[in-house]
Picture (tube, rainbow, N blue to C red):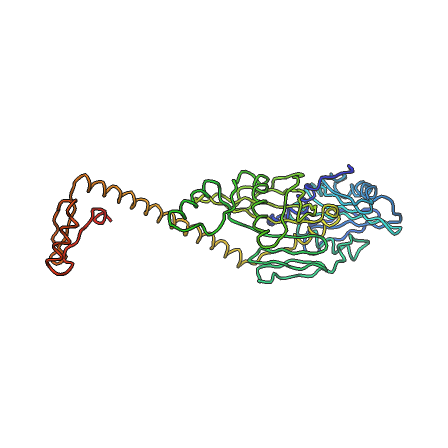
Length: 430
């Protein structure tokens, strides 16, 4: 294993599966591995190999040794690491891996912890699409076995969103700071977790069109649109972040500034979205250097030129990110949205499309009326006549355009009331 491992790969294994649907589970247990206890997930087909031994050297060395020892379990082949991290003192190390079990692909997270004269190695695994759901349970199983990562003893509790729109598991010291219809922000000693945040974004052409519509209606645009092109997740992130930061500052939140994108990995977009990616990047939040893993989704382009920008993300101080990531992953994997919120979101999107369509229809209709009025005025000028009407009998007569107003005024003065009226050509064509 390299001294510096790729964090985005660990995210793809640990988080990418969270967004996937159901998949076949593992069922049959392989033969035992000498020196390891096997703990099966009671709610699925995943499992955990765990071993505890004397010694407190390098966590990286212990993890490398564990990979060689469990090779017989995974069809006789050593698991292939795809990303991981270790702390500054090499007392804790983790790595995401791929392997096969009875010919079927599996994914997992292996960890090693050394200290106090002992070392613990654990290898958690499941199918690639189910690991995100089973990993928190497997870590809890480790708490009753031969050793466990420190986060397994953080006193996790199921926490409902304050508005009833979902729930998630949080450890001690964490609290929900914002929740609204499936969107949530929670903060704690390990960092910040945001889930399901979404906003309507305008393409540049759509923003210009919307500005023209509001201008034509004679009122200022009631909001400042977020403007970006849905080219790809990284470009959208870079374009939208400073605009969101400006809005955040207006409500007293610290500004955010992207420092660098470390890596981005595409992911399968769910239904209703055109692109998705996991993005690992560093940023400055209120002067504090942080690191963030974000799952960014770009919605399909609507007929009015707008699209949906959706993201969930885990943020921590840059120097403690590797240490805090497992806790953030577990929080992420436990979060769920209530069914009624999903349905309400769909209904709202449909209503918005209908409302936008009506605005465009009225705008086009008003534009046509305006053009027709101009045409009719020129027609009257060319003809040199205008119709006047006897409102008592309904009789209409063409008179000289230059004298029509004076003729109607004289007739009404003679009758003693407004019996006659002018009918401009554009009124007839309404």
